[in-house]
Image 1 (tube, one colour):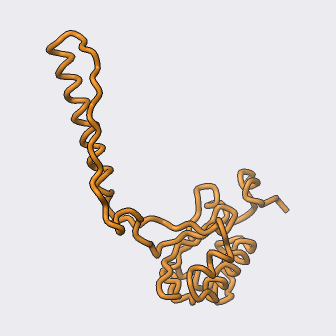
Image 2 (cartoon, rainbow, N blue to C red):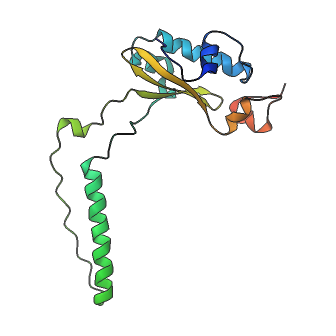
Image 3 (tube, one colour):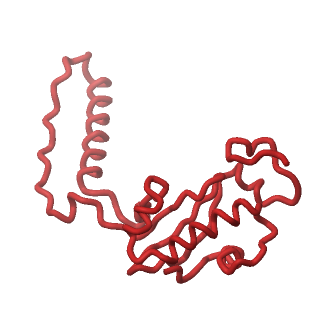
Length: 169
């Protein structure tokens, strides 16, 4: 179920109102995608409807696992020892560095934590960014890449938009 939108214009698109800042094709496609989000009971419904157009976004607040930080520290220490040896001694034969033994990880650290943040490619360079929690799409936001900004236009279609499917009338 569609619960909340971050943009007033997106709410107007959902309610069927005319939004002048968007091309009618964009409005039609966005409304179609919003209707699928509204009808979805769980995220599997959305995945089945959109397939590879739905991308699960990683949580921004999740830190790197310990294995990444240990590898970075080992590489940094290895570089420091090589530069100090180069200054003090002639070129020695490189000796293999012992690899750190990986720590046994618990089941929760082996898999990334599930996320509820998704991005749905709408088309024409536009996408819907939302959170899907307990069968409800929350904080739906309409985003676009730099070329699609021209679609919020005040006149004709720009020539650079041909890759997005727009042809001048």
